[in-house]
Every structure is written in structure tokens, then in C-alpha cells.
Amino acid sequence: MSLHVERVGAGPDLVLLHGWGLHGGAWQSLAPRLAASFRVHLVDLPGHGHSRDTPFGTLDAVVDAVAACTPLGATVCGWSLGGIVALRLATRHPERVSAIALVSSTPCFASRDDWPHGMAPETLEAFAEGLRAEPAKTIRSFVNLNALGGPHARDRMRELAALLVARGTPPSPALAAGLALLHDTDLRDEVASIDRPAAVIHGGRDVLTPVGAGRWLAGRLPFARFTEIPEAAHLPFVSHPGTVAGALESLCGRGTVREEMRGRGTNREECR
Image (tube, rainbow, N blue to C red; front, side):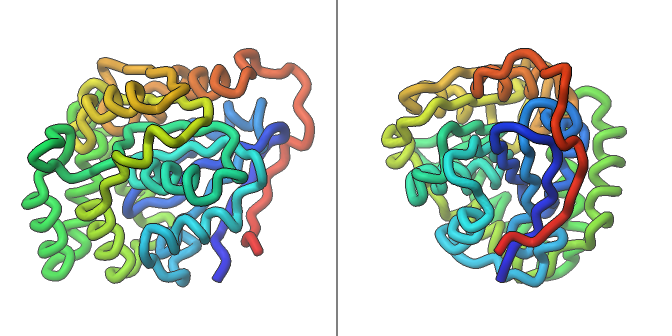
């Protein structure tokens, strides 16, 4: 089944992948600027947003669905869960990825004995149990952690609450499958094989994916540039959109916004 994609702007292809529980609208504060330099593809991941009828399966199934919507040689930018998808996309479908950007992301979301840069597995397990008992409250609590510690946190939480209902809460099976993916996935052994230009962008106050995960990624990816935003939490593209956009433009050699823009219109479509 096809995924919903919104496309804006014109230029080199830039695919944006959102985090758990949200949808492509999460990028609304950043997309208008990026549309001046790129053809931006805002994907609703399986089971999320307008792709809610597409099952959220294994990581590879999610990646294959995204690959079907990703033009050859695109820059792929993933935030949080979307970053895990972007990493696997770069190794499973390398022809689709010319450069990769990872925002508040990690190769391994849950902490392990040899990985201190993650969330306690017990916390993720508690969220999974909460989904079964009180799904609306649990997803709201988890998503609020995106803003915790960052500037204007209460305002960000209100914005996230509005985003959650804008395209409907994802079905419980999709949310549970996404949490399980975060709990179980460990891509550390794959990272060094990604021979693409990379931008790693991370907030210094991130409580979901500690900044140490971003520093580790930047140190292991062969061709990475690291941007740390000390005041940002898990939503640097919301709190510091100019910095994030600048890092993406630099990654693609488009550091200045074009004065003349082609095809600035917006379209929503399903990728086939």
C-alpha cells in the first residue's frame, strides 16, 4: 500500500522523515525555507498521519515503503525514529540516498551495557504497557518529552498536541510496533559502511536521544559534519529552524537561498 507524501518547492530532492507518533506535518516550521532550495518530500510513515492504513511492520518493511517514495539520489533527512529509517535506507537502498541528515537521532534508541546514550529499556517498556491501558495519555506524554528541556517548552508541547490530532492519532498496532522497533533496533554495526556525505544535528538538552548519540554518529559516519545546538531539546528544527536549514543547505552545497524559485506550489499525493 502506498504512503502519503506532500511535496513542496523545486530543486534537488530532499526527503524528510518524521518521528514516532507524528506525521510529515511535524516539519511545518522548516519546510517553507527548504522549499526555496529543494524539492521537499514530506512523508507520512506507515501507520502514521494520512498513511495510517498502511501497516507499520518490521524496520525493513518500513524502509522498503519509504524507498518506493524516494527519488534516486535524494538527500534523506530523518528525525528520531525517522533517522533510524534513514540509516537503514542508506544501507538497504543506497541508490536512493546521495546524502543523509540525522536530526536528534541515534543508531540505538534504548540504552545497553555498552551504550549509555539511550533511553532506559524499562522506560520504553512502561510506555508500551501504557499504550495498552491509556493510549491517548501515553502518546501525549511521550510526545511531550520531545520538547522537555528546550526553549519555550510549554508552547512546543501545545503545538505538538495540535499536530497529534491534525491527522488523527495513529492506530494502536502502529504505535506499539514503532515502540518495539525503538526498543529492539541497534544499527551501530551498519553506520561505518554509509559512505555518503552526512549531517548530524543534535540538541544539547535532548532527553529522548542524548547528545552523546549524535556525537557518536558523527564520529563513526565516514563523511559527517556535526552541528550541536546547546539550547535545543529533541525538536531543534522547531526551536532553531534556521540552524537546521543551514546545515541541510550546506550538506547539499546550497548555502544561499535562490532568489528565483521554480514551481513553488504545493501538492499532496500518494507515491506509487
